[in-house]
Structure formats: C-alpha cells, structure tokens
Length: 281
Image (cartoon, rainbow, N blue to C red; front, side, top):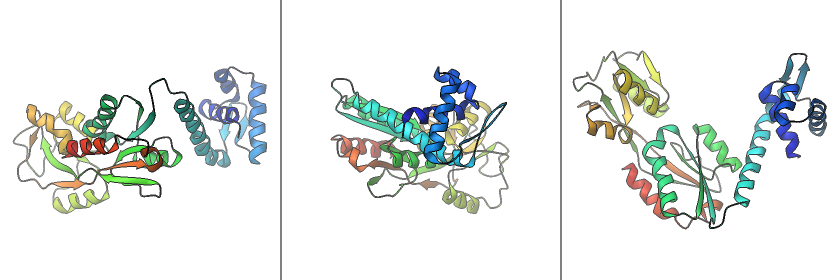
C-alpha cells in the first residue's frame, strides 16, 4: 500500500474536496484524481462520490478510513522511532484517560522523563475505546485506564482502586437534594451503586462525562459532586472544596497496561509501577 495514496485519501476526507486536497498537498488536482483512482482500483471499491460542490465518502470509504488513519499513524511512529537522537535507547508512547492524567498520568511521565533520560516519550489523551485501538495498532505501547484491555501480548497491572468521594464548595452542603449537585458518569458499575445509594434523590440537572470537567465547574460555579479523591485532595487541603461527612464512597479499578514486546526493553518499568502505585494510594 502506497503511503502517498493513503495521505491523499485522508486529505480529501478532511477537506471535503479534491481541489482543496490538492491545495493542501501542494500538487495539481489531476494528480489528486489520479492517486484516488489508483487507490480505488487497488481496493476495487469507490471511496468517494464526486460532485460539483465536493466529495462525499462512500460506505467503503468509511470502512477504509480507520485503516488509512492507523497505517499513517504507524508510519509516523516508525519514522520517529528509527530516527531517534543520540543517547536515546528506548521509546515509550503513553496513552491516558483524561480523568487519570492529573496525578497518575503526570506521575508516569515525570518518573520516566526525570529518572530515565535515555527514553523518548510521547503522551496522548484518549477515551477507553481509543486507547484500546491505539494499543492494538501499536500507536501507543502503554496506557493508564479504567479497564485492563485483556489481550495476548499485553500485561495489565492494577494500580489500586480509585476512591470516589462526595465533595462540595460549601461545607454545609446537604448530602441529598443539593440543587447544585453535579452527576459525574464514571461507568456502569459505579452508576448502579450510585443509583442504589441515592434511589430517593431524583435526577441531577447537570452531568459530566469527565471528573476533570466537573471539578472545573465546581470551582467556577459551586455545587457538589463525586470526584476521585486523588483529584479533589489539593482542593480539600486548600479549603476550596469540602468533603461531605457520612456520604457513601464508591471505587473503581485503575490499570497500567503495557505492550509486552515494548515493555521488555524498559529496564525501569518495575520502579515506575511502584511510583504509580504509591501515587494512587
């Protein structure tokens, strides 16, 4: 598969037009047309419907998009890893769920960057499905996530359960029926436990899919929410947040997932795991 053809396909997809794709790639429109035809001939399927106002992706093109993106990402990574600067011996590409970056993701990056300068690093935020896909394609070779992504050739190390506690910007905020309560969706299992514990409390007017976003909202607008204790701790110490006494706690597991082939080159892995487990406690 020709990398130039893949890059041309993605440029058409992103710009919505063969003309604009040619401008982005700095080639003629006829060159873009010829590249697209060559790719469609190779695949045996039309990838775009051409019309006067642009190009619309076909069903086959939609299916191909995922593979084109993965292959170009892998090429970018391969080029990075084979042209490492002097003194660099290994590479670690990290993925991290957004809510796990404060504290754990930062700890992982610092522990490698500070103590193991012969390792080149990159870090990427992603959802659970994105992280698993990136591990599968090799775009990343380590991830901090709430799921172990079990698969042959990977290892998942538990970092300890993440405690979720009820906090508020007012020390006298009620445990139930707080009009400023924000619901943070942290997964089905915790959601079921929350629904059981607060069966009589009704539905929150505002919800977030990220504890980091919920924290920003609390600090800006006030209210209460269940947050990871790790995330809330500095604000509890500063007095900007207050823990609500007697409120039930919840927890969810956290894992460091590594690609076994890459991890075999990381002599520092055991030390980093220990640092992460300490940071999560």
